[in-house]
Image 1 (spheres, helix red, strand yellow):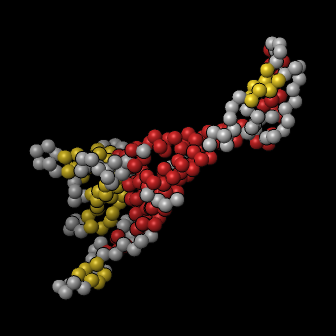
Image 2: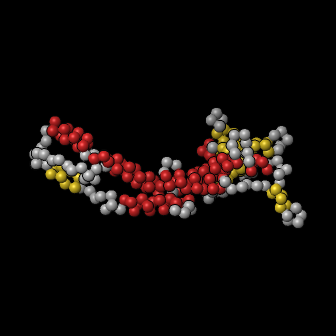
Image 3: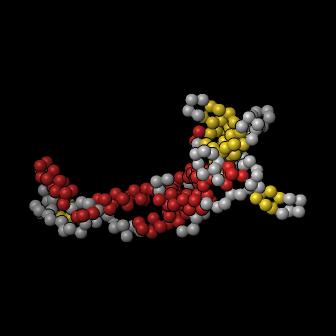
Amino acid sequence: MRHSIVWACNKVLSESIASLPLVLYKEDDKGNRTKAKDHPIYDLISKLPNQEHTTMQWRETMITSLNFKGNHYTQIIRDGAGRIVSLYGLETSRMSVKRVQGTGEKVFLYDTGTKEVMLTLKDVIHVAGLSLDGLTGLSPIAQNAESIGLSVAMEEFGATYFRNGSTATGALSYPNELTEDAYKRLKADFEKNWAGMKNTHKPLLLEGGAKFEKLSMSNQDSQFLEGRKYQKEDIAMIFRVPL
């Protein structure tokens, strides 16, 4: 989530979907639809799923869980008569899903921090992304870790490069070996007066027969900016969000 493009893609998807109206309808024998405002879950899904969150917050959390973990779980809370009274999103990382041997029933094991609680299909809304086993969805982040990791590495490189700031990347060579004191003075003087963005493009002042030799290519020569642009496109493609 610390990557700006991943963050932006999730914001686009979660906020857009959460802002859509979520309305329960009923249909008569003639196929006419009207809002089922008298249904007990009408207000839960369209306004307040519980006492802590709005429907927009609930669905933002749902889509964010899907984008990062590939799954979302909501616990269904019922009263003594079995009527649904609230819906609470559960932390995806605490949930595991399995099938009961023999019956094939799908059950959910939720770690509360103090104990593991078993929930059944009547207790949980499970929204899963692309799946290989029919039980849980695959995490888009985990499946594309190399691509996102490369982009993160490029951003870290760029931040380090511009933080150090000296475009004159190279080496100082001396005709004779420097004493320990002379080396320390040169190093301290260089870091103070020529490293960092504020010292960019300042001329180097050399002494004692020193020569400067450029060792590496510039950011432009190494196509750094072009590489970052490609990585942005690659990540946007994972989430199917237009640039």
